[in-house]
Amino acid sequence: MKLIVGTQEEVIKKAAQRYVKLLNEKPEAVLGLATGSTPLGLYAELVKLCAEGKISFAKCTTFNLDEYIGLDGTHDQSYRYFMNKNLFEKVDIRMEATHVPSGAVKSDEEAEQYDAEIKAAGGIDLQLLGLGVNGHIGFNEPLTPFTSMTHIVKLTDSTREANKRFFASIDEVPTHAYTMGVRDIMQAQRVLMVASGANKAQAIKDAFFGPVTPQVPASILQLHGDVIVIADEAAMSKF
Ligand code: F6R
Image 1 (cartoon, rainbow, N blue to C red):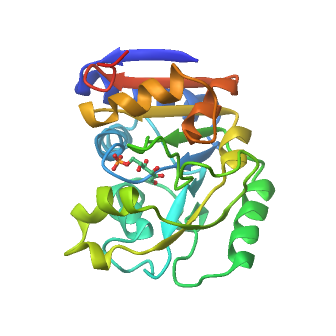
Image 2: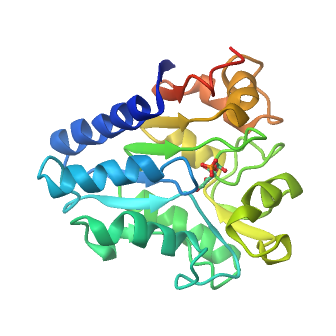
């Protein structure tokens, strides 16, 4: 694992450079993407780099990690909507090459189909991850089997609590979601985790400086051969 620590601004710039390098070397790369607060600055930087002609998404394919069940893509808290507004509509990507599980349906077939599409695309070249305060990656909550593929999850109270800031009340936060599994994430060629803020410090410590255990889903990344963690000083404050 390679660890890069910097200011918030450096974190964004350094993460963005990974995409410039990858997409210049392999324009048809398959990107695994994340939502949440963490990637917002990175996506804004990628939009800027695309407008400046330094990066192009025209040939790439994307797969998002997860989606709430019960919200369709037009709901402003769905992850499809988030991706459209923060990245896809602002860069030169082909919309049909962007994939987010459909939260409009709840079925195991949808999950299986998602994995089949990732496989058909040739697998993920670079998987972007944020880190949950409980150590989750995607919506793989503590005790998710390391062997899991895309599946339906019941969200934990702590995750619903952490995400309620985006909804009018906690009752509106969906109870279930689709998530790529831990194995999907481990099968990516490269993983880029971005973490910022003091509320991630314990999760960073548990994930990368403690035992590998399903109690801390992100800890499995210690066994991945190509992981870069880019974190700000606050997120590294317990190390
Ligand atoms: C989102 C995702 C989640 C988040 C994590 C951190 O697609 O997969 O694992 O990355 O919950 O969320 P933020 O960035 O909002 O702190």
